[in-house]
Image (tube, rainbow, N blue to C red; front, side):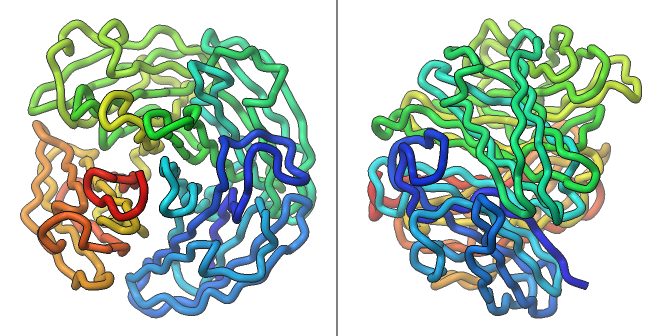
Length: 468
């Protein structure tokens, strides 16, 4: 049976601000994409990628060849895939005869100064949803802006309704747009004059049961230099729950701070309790009321937005978010942002909160890098059940780094999460700027199930070979 993944936004040599035929204002620079596909089975996988223009026509049908069992393969579009028009912005459908996972990096070309990159995941055909939510969007908010790429995964055209909510929970704008089959449209908040500048928003994108949607949202700082180079990507979410797990939350951690955004996607007003885990200690915070469509969340670098008991907390931890007085009509989704605005400023990543149904004893991260064209990854896992979880990390071979494992990783009720900076993994080559690692990592745990993330950032402090 053919397995399919939707990749919402693919860019090749797109020169901002106004590329031909695209009514939007991407951040300045020449933008490109990289696609990584992981084979989740032990047998060899055959991969095919169809690229679609925004008008729904097929731009390129690409034979991706094969991927060995439990391996991965990366295509950097400017050099690995010929035949796409340039400039190009569109979407893609990845198909295979095996179970696969995929990610896409939206970035400036390797060697740019400053470097900017955001990573989103491919959306399985069963994961696309008639209604998809986005918790965090901005228009001219302290120099930050955003856009959302919305893909129609149906086989015919659909009119998509985009509804925006301000920080107070009021629905302030609705737009509609027809999107062709398998194509995508960019809802650009920066150029949306119906949204007041200087504010942040949440959103809902509505298709229908015959036309499920896949959504990727990117938000970004002004990018004038390395200190304002943050570029964050996350997937919109169509399914919520009453408990969310956040594997990584940081506060005053080497100048990094997290920000949470929890969105109410139900039909009743609700509040949530956030339980933070730092250094074996727990701290709780109760939100104000959050209306349907509205989002709420603290910035960890602002003491006034946190409980007084957390004033001296610092480090890397995790969190659990739970709906208070739950009913079937109270559902939430969420994201966690992490960035550095001090030293070295300009770095940032975002990931989606996990639901209990996302938990497993095995996780596969399609792309983990260590000193690879300046990029290095971090891995974070969190257990979601009571009891102990004993975990092993298995790194695939890549370049001069052979396959290796890290064992003896234990998660407990007191310390339910674990973080690893990839260059510090035991099988990497000692010293900076020499791993050149770009592989897949499998996490296997016994006992309590886990959720996890792998992030990606440009680390000039670790690898000075490719710009800043």
